[in-house]
Image (cartoon, rainbow, N blue to C red):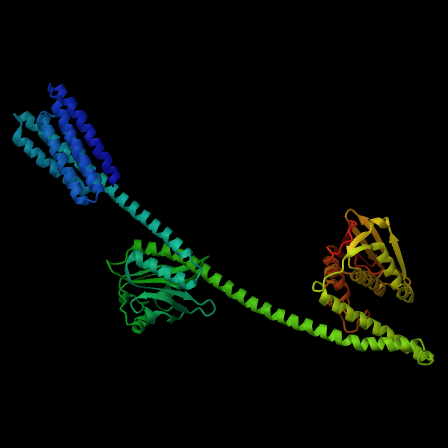
Length: 588
């Protein structure tokens, strides 16, 4: 309590000086120079003691020097200013109070004892002259005894509260530092080691260990130990509820056992394995979000038995450790999951590369025989190799159509594999010209299916310029129109509408086919997705056309989407938007 001592010392000096000066003046003593010198000596003495305390003089030496020195000064002042009737006499009460503030009951009794010596000296030097003075002296000393009792009781309580507050502050500081230490790492083993180091620092125990519960089996494993037999303890397993540790985990409560041999829950198997003798222990459960994940155990305190305060402090440390351990374990699990996912991703990527290489190789290998089939089919259909019977003509026409379909499928596969890798031949294009060419290319197929193809250009042609790859965009329009014709009913209509909206050129292809359900509107652009995926489906196709449309349009900085009421006969509307060209025909 250095702050209280400084206040009392300053108060003692100030009050002593004022009372001494005033008392002497009232009594008619006018030796002001002597008084000033006396007070200066008192002040210098107390300042010297304060300086010595700051330079490392032991507390006991400083305390006795302060009390004895000031007692001498008070005794001298009282003696030369009237003895037991001196105005200085009240300073004895200040000495008693100061001693009580420093040391409680011990300081109060020590101050009273020193004052008694001073009073004995005063009694010898200036004894009471008559019975009345003796009576006054007895009452005065009785008042001091009562004062000492009150001061002793109050200061003892004050000292106890201050000591407890100091202890609590030290515990709080320790827990804060422990929290920082435990939270400084996400490595599980480092967190466990830091926990045991913190326990040993504050309690000074012979041994300590950390046990964790296996979430799947419920078995308890000692993950780390320090002190006696630590190498043998690490890795030991207990069954659920076995021993004091197991019971503490099962009950979820802290346990203090002063004599393990007298506890029925004690399991001596660990001591037998480690060769260490456990006499007393504390065990606190490690709890996270209401679930016990393990226990912290400390054994054999070196400087006395375990106390309730020790148990409370270790329980608080256990709460911090439990959260740190759980965080570290979760981080470790996430790290392992990320590694597993990375391995799985690498494997999938390798398989995707193999699949792509296989599809690319097969596609290229199919091109040569397809070219031969198409070439000879044309020769035969043109009757350059002889006249054909009607049945032969029908058969060859079917072969040529299927060869063309297969060739288109191979081209789609190759296009999907090369988008982004081969780049685009960008140039300034007129979207209306592309639309006319696409409609005319699909018109024979539409006529064959009895479907009318209609082209609607709603904006001036100079407003319909775009930057793009003519071959790729022709693929896009052909796929959209071919899809619309394929799913449209006989006698129906397919319309292609082209217009300028703000900075975009908008193309819409609308049919009167079977339509799409809401869950198919996004999936229809996935590779190999079939609206009718059954083995006996009516509509053909490999499910690559719309996937190619989406990738080409997005590669041009545009967007494409489908709209449908999901009602047969009302069909679908596919809309694609492409950025309008600005007249710059440079290659992108």
